[in-house]
Length: 404
Image (cartoon, rainbow, N blue to C red; front, side, top):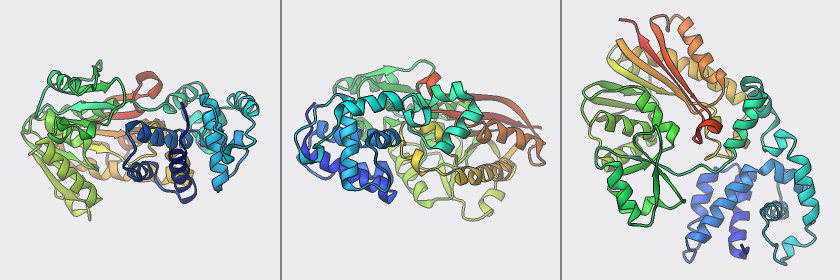
């Protein structure tokens, strides 16, 4: 591979925004990709993947390059030099790469890789908490898996097509997919491709949704005709899956505290042909109280640390703070206590997070069941998904039933 100056410039600009100005990596990459109309898919792929790579390995590369935050432009060029050297890419004779100690870089890499928090490139506090909660051995394997680039997984929209038909349609576009074992609606791309430009996407034949995330709606065990509440619907990946599982029959109430997310969900629902969804903004306690004891099923996809989805959000490693973890656990407990009241006797709720920490998962469920608001519920089953075992995002889900 040869390095091209304009692509490297774009990557350096993006990294400065992410590291020094706290911008979100996905938003920065989206902007960068619009920078030059002449770029082909390979050029855009280089900018996106290199930016994410350096973000993912920031701590390790910075230690090797001996640079500290806030980074100057020269510092970021040094990070790129480390990245390229470790990838076996020959450095061009540009002024930015003058005096790059290639042999020293490889030596430092070998030495630092053995210290987990540096080698796996995570903050000290995160390494401590995760090792304490999961055990050294599991955390070492898990963070290694979470540092890999995530596969692109599609969820076939069964309201509009079948897995076989979609697979054939994408194959005609030279997009090869494979069936994913134990995931009835999933197809995994064999090679990365921009599926959003396809006619199949525009027609609503599929959504991009990780394999673990596809397990949540399934876990809720919905049936056509039920009244289902998705309490933290966001932009609605799981809501749309619920609509498909319910064959558009019955009623789904999608709720969120962010109105803009529900607007996005409305747009996506239209494309997906999901007609049984109502949208309600949680702007006070009123919308919740109105639904007390009314729902057959309630999904609480709770806000969390997001440690299970670091493969697709590597910048979260640097944005997360230990104080946020304490705050979010309080929020999770409050949400579980309040939103669980919407389920009717004999109904069920699923509490889910995209975190791998027991303190956000099984500990929250245990505390809830022992509390006043949880005394009418019984624990049915739970599912813990770890990335190093599944190849998908880290996730947790628990199914609880309200006594009749």
